[in-house]
Image 1 (cartoon, rainbow, N blue to C red):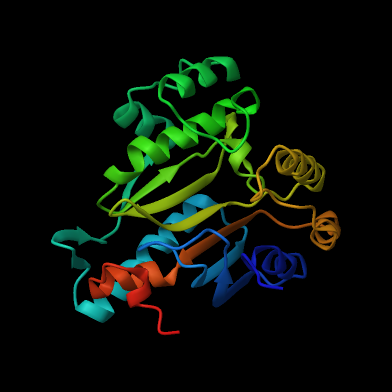
Image 2: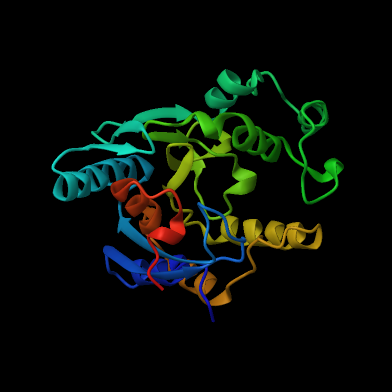
Amino acid sequence: YLRIAPELYLKRCIVAGLEKVYDMGRTFRNEGMSVRHNPEFTMIELYEAFADYNDMMEITENMIAYVCEKVNGTTKVNYQGTEIDFMPPWNRITMVDAVKEHAGVDFNEIKTNEEAQAIAKEKHLEFKKDLKHVTKGEVLNMLFEEYAEQHMIQPTFICDYPVEISPLTKKKRGNAEFTERFEGFVFGREVCNAYSELNDPIVQRERFNQQEKERELGDDEAYMIDEEFMSALETGMPPTGGLGIGIDRMIMFLTDSASIRDVIMF
C-alpha cells in the first residue's frame, strides 16, 4: 500500500482519455538512507499524450529554471561552494558516450554479453546476481554509476538507457538495444527520470515476464506484472511521454542543504 510511484495509475488515466495528468505526493522506496536518499520522499510525476522524451526534456529544464528564478531571482544557485546554472538548454549526452569519456570503455565496440562481462570483471563491478546472468546493458549502466555519474555537475541529461534496465520504456528509434529514456543529473545526483512510454501491450507483457525472471535471480527491485495496467494498455494508449522529478533534491539545491533530511520536515 506504500507506492513506489504513481506511474501505472497515471498511465491508466491517459488510456481513459485525459491527455495531460500529474500527481505530486509522497513516494516510498526501500533503498536505505543517506544524505541523498530517504525512504519517504516527495515526487511530481506527469504524463502527456502525443509527447515523447524530447518533450519531457524541454518541460524539465524549463520548469526547473522557472522555479529557480521565482525562488532566487536567477537560474544560478551556489550549492556547497559550486555555482550551478539551470538555464536551458541543459547538456545532453548518451550513456554510451559518458561511459566512453569517464570509464574509457567504448560500448559501440562491445557486441556480446560475454565481452561486457569480461569488462565488468576487469573493473571489479559487483552485481546482485551471478555475473554469467549479467547483460551488456546492465554492465553499461553500472559503469556509468561507478565512473561517470559523479562528474555530472552542471545540469545534464543522460540519454538512451539500455533496454534491459528500462522495462516500461519504448525502444529507441533506429537502435533497439537502447530506449528513449533520460535521467537528469546535477552535482552528480539524479534529479529526474523520464521516457517515451512503452504502449505496446504485447511487448510490455514480454518485459514484465523478463522482470519476473530477474526477481528469481535476486533483483528485488524488478517489476511484478500489474494485470489492471495490462488490461488498460490492451485497450489502447496513445504515444505518451512521462516524467518524474524528486522535489526534495531540488529543494536541496535551492536552499544549499547538504542533506536531504534538512529539507524533509516530517
